[in-house]
Image 1 (cartoon, one colour):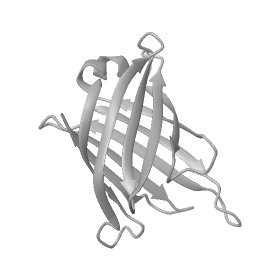
Image 2 (image 1 turned 135 degrees about the horizontal axis):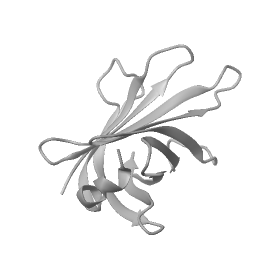
Image 3 (image 1 turned 135 degrees about the vertical axis):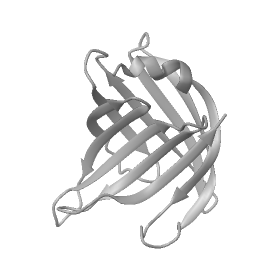
Length: 152
């Protein structure tokens, strides 16, 4: 799958709603408006997703830079977020899919082992765009942390 083949469907401005979970077994902790601008970067080799949202009245933002060599399904990404990240860039690897991609990174959780974090972007059949983020405890299964639904 060539990630660049998704560019025409993804590029531009989207708006929608972000749901944030601190406990995946409970209702969302917070729900707020969320906007994203998706651009093609470096002569079409990368996608940049710049999104904006708020938490308890405080503006938040994030950036996801995604690319692949367009010959294989392997995807790499760099992710930062003013709320979810420390001062470090999360480096992720994953795969392109027919309607998007999945990437997996990790973050330190001292004094224990690192935790995993995945990001799944997919175009929905009805024309929307969904970004899911899961927290992955050591030795555990993914737990929903963020769901963003965008529309044009």
